[in-house]
Amino acid sequence: MRSSTYDKLEAVYRKFKGYIGTPELMKEGFSNRQIAVLAKEGYLEKVCHGYYWLVRKKEDKPSDYKCIEVCLSDPRAIVCMNSALYYQGEIKEEPEYLDVATARTDRSLQSMNFPIMRHYFSTNNYLMGMRKIETEFGCYNIYDIERSICDMLRLESDIEIGIVDKIKINEEQYRHILRYAELLRVKQQL
Image (cartoon, rainbow, N blue to C red; front, top):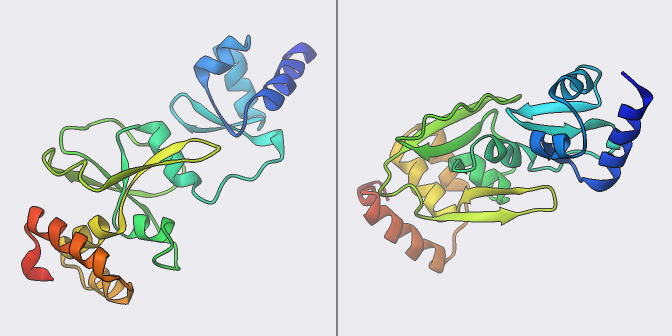
């Protein structure tokens, strides 16, 4: 490639922070072929369809990069269960895969560079307890602690129940858990 292409890339590094989409790269004057070559040469890391991480910017990915990247792939995805508890500081050990909730009707592909476990939720309860987290690198959706606990109890796995038992909850959180448990029909498990 011409040196002018790499000069344009340096301008992109100064202008953008972390993640960049194909449309933004094309507005900066790159062709699809040039984007592919830059990814192959290691200047860009493809994180999902249409989005790249600016590798040579010498900036580390944020600690919650998996959450951001899965929401770049599918903006309707919600980080859930023990992954949500981990990213909110309730459990110390990062799960081996990212738990992601999507609506039962959502069939978008989520091909990521890390393992994910996709859970399909009913459209009636899908958005209940969701919060949007804004970061300097992008935003992502995550269920609150109380909703995550109820979802883990609903699965009735010994591992999940063991994790839930270790979480310290206050009285207000317990009231929220009871409300969610009633709506999600898991009150007996409490």
